[in-house]
Length: 248
Image (cartoon, rainbow, N blue to C red; front, side, top):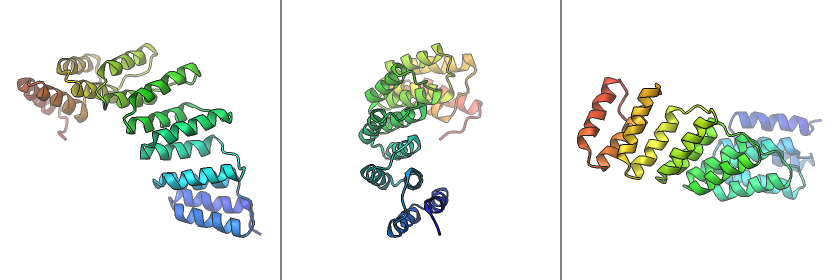
């Protein structure tokens, strides 16, 4: 006779196959047969929904498991939060983070980074920065990916001074400043009308041997165009071609 473990294996296969509807159907069969749904059942189904962009269904399942008294673990929370991130549901992601802390579930670097990503998508740069500070207070290590997410959140809002500070903070902590970091900081300069600072950052990249990609060049060119520096923009286009960086 099939038991919870057997059905969980089927739901796990649905998750891997990105078939969220089938996962829900299997859960319903379990209910109809009076077979207990446990943490693994819900976590696998929630993950299947998250992978298919069904964040609302994932959240409904999460709320259902809480009502049924089934314990949510770090895997469950990470899957729901990841779904919220993709949908830019930053407030829900923050609420889930609070639940984790209240219930004593370990909040690791990945969870914080996912919540920061949700804030970035919703252009909530102050909240992204605050989450980074919360990580530091709670002794949760921030990775280059975490910092790049926070810098990107600030960049889309043109908060260039904060992006520069965060990049310096990365350096002071020995975290590798990469092309993506510079591209985000240059984006913040472009949005803030700081074309001179954008050029300084390009020169810094050249000096330190950090490769420049299409986004780096395109953003710096856009910054120069906005600042009326057409001759500089044209020179950057020539440099881009000379370095065989593809135009977007």
